[in-house]
Length: 301
Image 1 (cartoon, rainbow, N blue to C red):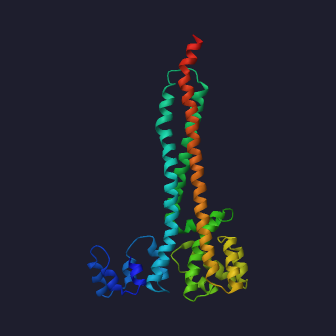
Image 2 (image 1 turned 90 degrees about the vertical axis):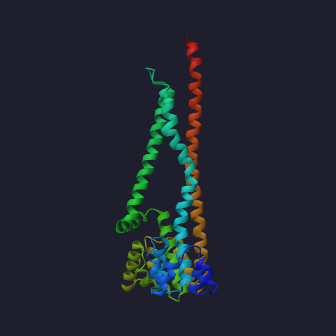
Image 3 (image 1 turned 60 degrees about the vertical axis):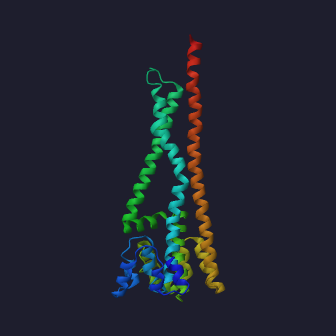
């Protein structure tokens, strides 16, 4: 809301007056001479780290818009993945913690293992192994999120074989380049500004690329061979330099990347759904086998 009011031409104080809730504390700080950007930095929300960088070279509403767009991309991926994977994960959790153990209890009094019992044990081991892998992945993610330098080294090492990591890094890099270009800063000079962004791996990448340029390497060759950047971004920047169109190729690239991530998230959710529904199908067969056990016992009498 604040961003829209500022873009429409309202002054900062008038825009703040329209905000819901008690904003007296904010007006008091502004009247005391504090900068609005400094006040925002006291907030720990994810978009502030992007805003701090963009505000140095653009207006307040533009900086807020770009910061929110970058944050929406990062946070949107997490929310979409959690939303699409919640139901399959819940099914697997219920099977592992409740349904399968109860089914195994029905065989507890039998001395010999039946094929159905063996399959249940295998299914339980597989589902438990899957959850252990998920938990380990979450712990690794949290560890990397809290250790910037280790995260940077991991991304640089993994990007050699992971197109997903290259696309993720390229999208954020392209977002910063687009905003710097809007401020009249050429891509080659933008590397100097990117050495001060609040993202450690991007700082290191910008320093690495700047050093190679100073050693005499061609700019396009540096872009093409940078491990954290994708081939799609290289072709986009190459087209941008050849056609002298600074805005359109980058916008098309960002749109294409958003479509790529949505498609990737759908594939991941379909994979999880396939695993969950596969467990359901196997359990249905095993339940049928269990229901048939009394009839099999009668046949042996």
